[in-house]
Length: 222
Image 1 (cartoon, rainbow, N blue to C red):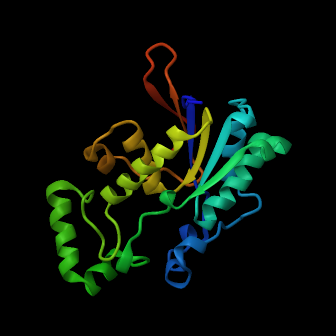
Image 2 (tube, rainbow, N blue to C red):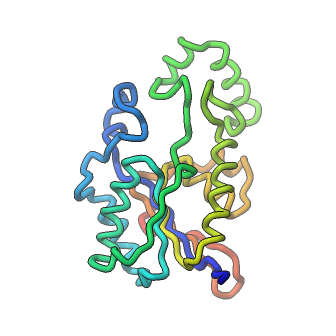
């Protein structure tokens, strides 16, 4: 049975320990960095309360999460707030395609440290940023933003092939922008200008009833 997607909610993970203290990236692998408050983060609770106002039937909803701990923890809080006891009826899936951008050898470093440790790559990044933005620059042993957009395009195929009308997707700042770029057919110039959304922000994508175009509605505004 082919079911058309009717709505998507993109939720960036709530505030993590690394958001509060970036040096955490040097001590803890990125994928296991937790939320500051994994039980009752106020931002995640607010996002869940806003999603509750959409009055979605849990049986028609699929929740997707990045494989990173902070996204899984955000998902638990949000779904509990949005659906209460009915959260058990929401189908859940996990995808490594939703993971954060991989910064490779530069993971956890400040701009000053990147330049000091790898001046040749840093100069290339500077040239590309000056001429055409950083979208195509690939971090040493890591990813470019273009790489992230490509894997999000692959993930979108999973959404289209699912049997659910509504999707709630828990992901990261760069992957949120990459999803929107791929879903809405936006260009790299848009990506470069669009900032990362705040932690625990929730963005609704749905079709306009009259024209059939996809519209963006911030449930928890940036």
